[in-house]
Amino acid sequence: MPTRNWSKIACPAVELSLHKTLGSGQSFRWETLENNEWRGVLERFVILFSQTDTHLLFEVLNEHKCAPAKLEKKIQNYFQMEYNMQDLYRQWSLQDPNFAVIEKQFAGVRMLSQDPVENLFCFICSSNNNIKRISQMVDKMCCKYGDFIGRVDGKDYYSFPSIESLAEDDVEENLRQLGFGYRAKYVNQAAKMVLNKGGSKWLKSLRNLPYRKTHDELMKLPGVGAKVADCICLMSMGHTCAVPVDTHVFQIAAARYLPHIKGVKSLTSKVYWLIGDHFRNLFGDLAGWAHSVLFCADLKEFEGEAKQAACALKRTAEVQMPGPLVPHSHKKKRR
Ligand SMILES: Nc1nc2[nH]c(O)nc2c(=O)[nH]1
Image 1 (cartoon, rainbow, N blue to C red):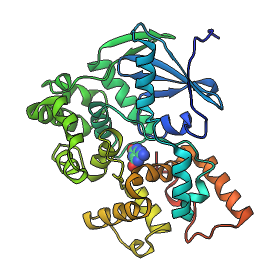
Image 2: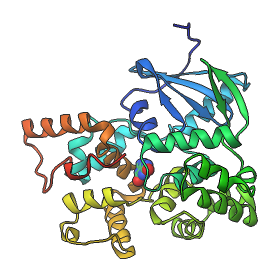
Image 3: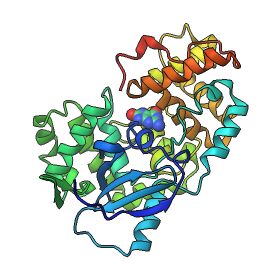
């Protein structure tokens, strides 16, 4: 075991669960090691994270240099530490008995503030895919088109590719050969379109538009539907009210919030916005954050914790719910 040279940021574990934040399909660049350590890439840093009950611990593992205070700030920004999750959870639990059921087992689920370029191309890869496979694809894309940034424990690390490199003419063919399927075309075409509009500067400028305008602009990109556009709005554009709705969120909504949509066969635009608006009315400006806790509680990866929450509910019988906490019908299929 190497001796660690940890830097620390005061952050109680109830404010940040590394496991549920880095492992719930927001970012696909983190791998879990032993002892709740997480290793991955943030900008050009290869970083190792861990945590105690009171602190977030981090160490840079490659040669990329940065003033300690500047790096600490970057990490605080990445985890959006200015938000107090305990206050928010309290508020959301008062507003929603379903939320109250899971708040303890799913404490510390935070939204990461991601780079829009990485966020866009990772979520183009996310269509009809699971966390493990998306992470593998993203890894391949970085190896092929990113810059080498360091070797740690025999593994090579790469930065996220630039839009310019993803817009090259041979990208579609190369990504197809790497197993991207139909997503290869979308990655390449979206890169070309973003480049034509002004590249990463244009993409970042979408942050300054109102939420719905940002969503409309993103949906013009190949491979970006309403759900992916909302993931980008929420995860890298600062639109905290964005609620990504996929079939699983639809199932949650139908089971526990909007029983009248149970018979609806497909996720039309009308139903999509009905669900998002319901969450926005219920949870307010940070509806997307609240949604992410519910989303996380529904992931197969966290089935154990969701079951514990259901058992705790049974024992105390304090909260009445119209539908099951864990809608088992889609547990096997989902990420
Ligand atoms: N918080 C969320 N994370 C996600 N990952 C993914 O693939 N979809 C979602 C989502 O809707 N919310």
